[in-house]
Length: 170
Image (cartoon, rainbow, N blue to C red; front, side, top):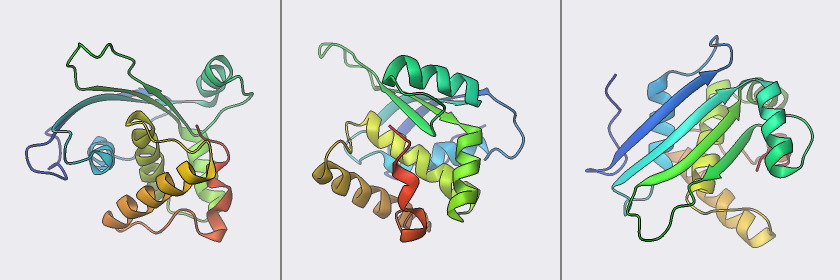
């Protein structure tokens, strides 16, 4: 399947989408491309990344192993850690738990595909170096997420109904 048009002309994304969960009610592969591309800056003409969709058991195992936290989480980000001398466009890997995303969307009263888009954009921003470990970083990252989602005609995920959406992801 051809990748959708990039946000910025001349931009390419090599996306490896791995399905390690039940495939019912998942967004189309083209949606994952579109959402990841939306998060990529114009000065990054070429990128490679993996998005792995998992069940709760795999998410919980990875969350425990890499973050020391019990239970599954919505998205885990694993940025590529390459030596500076290697000029490879690899961003890294995202691991997204299908069941957690579905539960959160329902609890927050959001359209399921909107929450998927948010998780892909949020995780991709982590791969690009953004974080939310302090208030200033969180404000910057959330502002960027809101702007990128708005460009996709998706409402602000941090409205009062959705305030808890940032508490369980990396």
